[in-house]
Structure formats: structure tokens, C-alpha cells
Length: 268
Length: 292
Image (cartoon, rainbow over all chains, first blue to last red; front, side, top):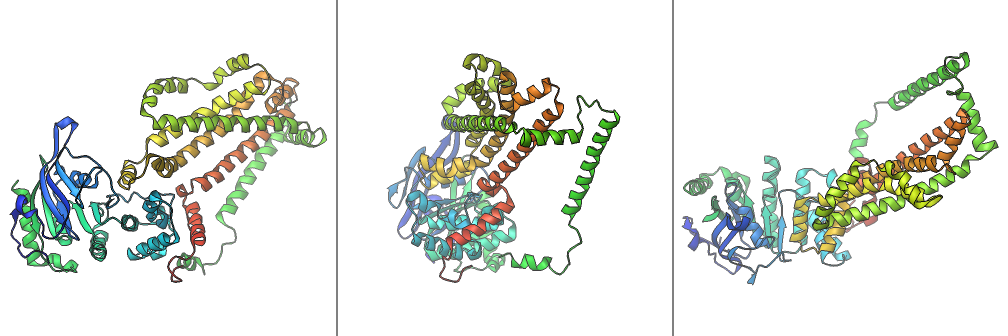
């Protein structure tokens, strides 16, 4: 809804989004092993408030590295990056992260897991508990609040992880292949719910995946990344109206975009 | 929540005897047959009654050492007291040092070769040295029990603390958890099941440890009692003492199992179900009457 154009522009210009940029990166680079391994090189981008950006690319393209750089879990080797205008120096409360594995604590019930971020920040009030319960209801786990992770399916565990992410109160959500370990049906279903939920929260979302269809279906823009060295090759705008249905994926317009992304990946 | 599951099981009618019950009866029958064979063999002279006393003689001895003479209580009290003290001290030391070494990579690197060497040495071999150094009475016995109790909790705590799930560590970092919070809310709880396994081994070792100490010192305790009875060729009473230890060993094993179900409940599905119901009751209603 923010953008009218649909042509693919080079990253240097298309990386700039309209509206207030929440996440901003200039020439972001990361090297490992004393500079001998270049994981990411020269990534420049702006992500607007409430925007949903997918990062797609093959293994080794630096998409997870970029996500970890934004989260502050790892430090930049070169360039600048800021969230809400403040340079990223380490993990922060306005940025939340979700991983491929649910990483729930097995000795805590679902709701106790959701309350973990609150607990790490201070004491839990009755209001926090109600909020956590509402979040579990939002992700469809109202009847499983007091279940332990071992009593939940993989999809349900990821729902708990999503509720926990929302409980952090972060308005920048970083998702690293959050449903990558789940079966196709569960994943599609959760993707639709994820879109509904982040829209409801007005959260700025960056979603890493290696699945092109998923990347386009979810996003306002798709960051296409290529390997060796990892680069942000292009930012592809996706202008389908929301809310989106799964049937969108079978339309010709959708497949044109899939082809464009595939070509961008292939030409590098 | 599990109402539907229960309904499915109904209406089938209960069999006359459960499988567990039938199995019990089979076991009892085999056990009684073996005991009868032993009794019979001993009576007609297949077994030398001097070394293999009749089961009935052992039962008589049980009666004597527990009721008429009632001398075993004191020895049991002494031995089990030492087991408890030595186990507590040894395993607390093991868990504490294991955690300390686990958290400290530098200390770990320097201690590793010594740990390997000490682990390869049978601990019991050191027992006479400890007695020589500490003299008579309780101190050398406690030292021996501590020694045999130390390693399993130490090694298990160490490995539990070192092998924390990397992704969970990253999660805690992304949520801005302090070192202390990560330790208390992630590393230690995650190590609990493996620590419990170490404690189980340690408690069994403690029972052997006290016997070895008493065999060497020969002053008092159930080990000394077994030694005395054996030297006086009162084998029936020695057997009664040994079977007493069997029962204690079994109770320890079961007790640790119950404790493990309580403390590391998330490793056992039945305990997890119970705990989940308990939590639901304790937390009560969080969504204004629509829940539960």
C-alpha cells in the first residue's frame, strides 16, 4: 500500500523505504575468522515502521548474519546500523528475536515461558499474567496455557515462542526461519496467522527464509540475498493488498514475482 | 482437558485380572519355588549349611537381630548416618565444584587432565590411605564415602553446565539477560536431570563406600557386623544383614526415582501431566471466567 511501483530496482536506491525508517543500515558488513570469511558485504537498507520485509536467499548468503547484526547479538565489522535512530551496540529491549527452534524452557508451562522476558526485566504483576494469557489466546493456545513444552506439538511450541516474542514488547521483530522445521501445512497456516498478528501489533518485521513463495506471500518487500560474499542484491516490492489469502499464491501476478526473485537470485 | 480420552476407554469391560497382576503372581511363584529349592537342597545336603544356611535359618536370624537380640539397629543407625553425611557432603562438593569448573573455561582447561587421571583411579584404592591419615572413628569413614560420592555429581554437573543449548543461550542474550539470570533461569535448571542422574549413582556408591570403610576399620556399623558374623561362621545372620542392605538399596533406588520425578518432572511424561494440572490450579483463572 505504500509503494506503487513493482519493477525491481538495485538495492542502493530501492533499499530506501518511504515513511519513518525504523531500521537503518549503511554499507553493513560482517567478516568472521579475522576477516578471512566475508559473511556479508555492503548491505544498505531502510525499513519503515510497520513494514514486513522478508530476506530470502540460499545458505551462506548472509541472511541470518544480517538478522543477528540487527538484533545486536553479533557486532558489525563495517558500516553503520541503527534502530529507532540509535546505533546498535548489543541486544536491546525494542528488538525481539525468534528462532527456527522454539527454544522453550521445558520446565516451564506455556504461560511461564511467555512471561520469561518480563521476568528478566523485573517482577511479574497480575497485569503481566493477564497480558501473557491474552497473547496465548491470540496465538490460539487458550486451552494450553498450563501445558509444558513436551505436551505441545512443534507448531504449538512455535506459537508459544511467538507469544513470548510479543510479550517482550519489542516493536521490531526479527524472525529467523521461525517455521522452517515444521511441516508444509502447519507452516502455511502459521504464516497466515503471523501476518494477522504482526499487522494487529503494527510491528516492524524482518523475516528470514529460504522459501521464495513464503517470502513474497508475507512481505511488503523482499530482500533478495546472494552468497559468496553475502550481499543484499535487490529489494523487490510486493504490492498485493492485505489481508492476503493462501489462494494468492496461485495467481499469475504472484508467479511473475516469484520468477523475478528467482532470476535475481540466479543472475548473481 | 483429557475427558475425551477417558470416554474412549470405557465400555470395554475390565478383564478379570490386569496384566500387571498376573505378572506379579508369576514372579512370586518363581521366587517361592527357588526359595523352596534352596531350603530343600540345604536340608538333604546338596548345599553345605555352614556356608549356605537354610532360608528358614536366615528368617530366624532376622527375628533375632531385629527383635530378640535387637543388636542390628545400632549398627544400621551408625552406617546410615555416615552414608547420609558422606553423601550430602560429597555430592554438594561435587555439584558445587562441577558448576564452578563448568562456568570457568580457564579452570576447566587446567583441571581436565587431573580429572581424567582421578576418574581412571578406582576410588576405593585410596581408602586405606585415608584411614592411615585420618585415624579411627567417623572422620575416615566420612572421607571415604565423600570420595566415592564426589565424582558422579561432579562430572555430571560439569557436563550439564558445559552442554547448555546454544540456541537457548542466544535467546537469553537477545532478551538482555544478565549472567546471573542466565545461570539461575537457564543453565542450572537445564542441568538438573543430568545432576539428578549423578546423585543417584552417588547414593548407591555411598552405600558401598560405608561398607568398605567398615570392613577395614571393623569397629561398628553394618559392614563390621557382617564381618563379625562371617568370622564366627554365623552365616545366617550375615545373610540377614546382606538382605537388609538389599532392601535399603532398593528403597534408596525407589526414593531417588520418586525424587527425580518430582525435581526433574519434565523428563517424565506422567509427572509432567500431573505438574501441568497442578499449575493450572495454582494459577487459576487468567482470562475472566472463559478459561478452564
